[in-house]
Image 1 (cartoon, one colour):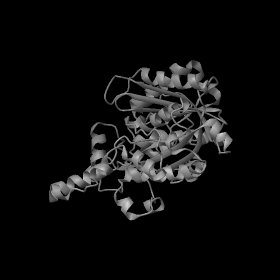
Image 2 (tube, one colour):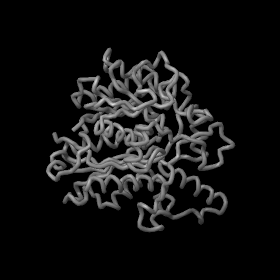
Image 3 (spheres, one colour):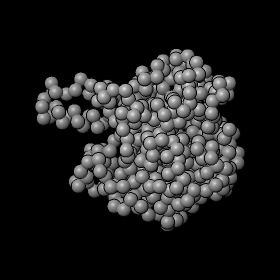
Image 4 (tube, helix red, strand yellow):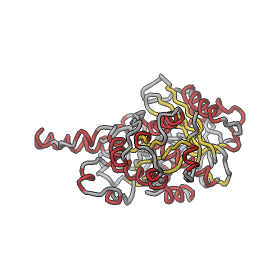
Length: 410
């Protein structure tokens, strides 16, 4: 069994489009949530989202033709992948391209392209639907486009597990390297689904916050919480066989040390209230990683700000860690980024890794009113200097999908 290192990272997020800016803003409690500007939201009950700002695809593509043929979720993935690949130096390391893979998923895929092309079909007829509609819309094309861009011919696997998507891509990439199927994998997720149709769907299944004040939008673990805020963006990590990374002198940000993958098999949207699936995923990751000191463990919680999720996740952590759960350092960075759906697991994994690398726990901002059902240490409002030695990131998706990835400090 081989060890797995993280040697590169890239992000496109509502609080920054580089790893450095993203992390600096998390530490400073900067909120990326604001009024919806991407479309006219006057017909919706919801007025807040967490949009990516100042993104220019020309910074990451060579031609306008490539940009026009790529849905926004593909563009976000490509941008974050380019950052991660360049930071890692993996392409200059002499890696065999058939040992380099790509595991990038999306919960929803190219829905903006779907909406646009449906409009063309309705207004102008079938002959006017773009010949690039299908490759822009299908959820595997972020992985495919990144593989083409960097010549990665090894294992390539998109994952679609709703909000758990990119935690699963990281976990499955970890296993592929651990068991010898690849030497390095570009892993993560991307999402670009801020539009009237998506928002209407989430509103009508009672998942989104209806708050109008950005400081009251995403309230993980707070008694006032009333739903999540829709976010967008991408997070990409370079996972590499550990000894290979050491030999070439790569910067190792952390070691991927454990992974849990379970299903509630309970309900299409609601989590199992007892948290059985989450408990098993967390326990599997913690056990595989050999984590035995809760006081030096950072937990980047799924923490969506919905009543059911936050209470269940708190209950799950108590079941896994018992009385020691009170010693955990927990936060939900969704309080700043919103919920980035298929990208959220990878972005939060990067936050977890940076917490290990810097010794700083990012906060859960706008936390004001304690809830008896959520009575652990959620690092309220301000970052904390703790120097954790291990971190876990949990992601829990519609359909009952649960993922937990564990990292160790190097």
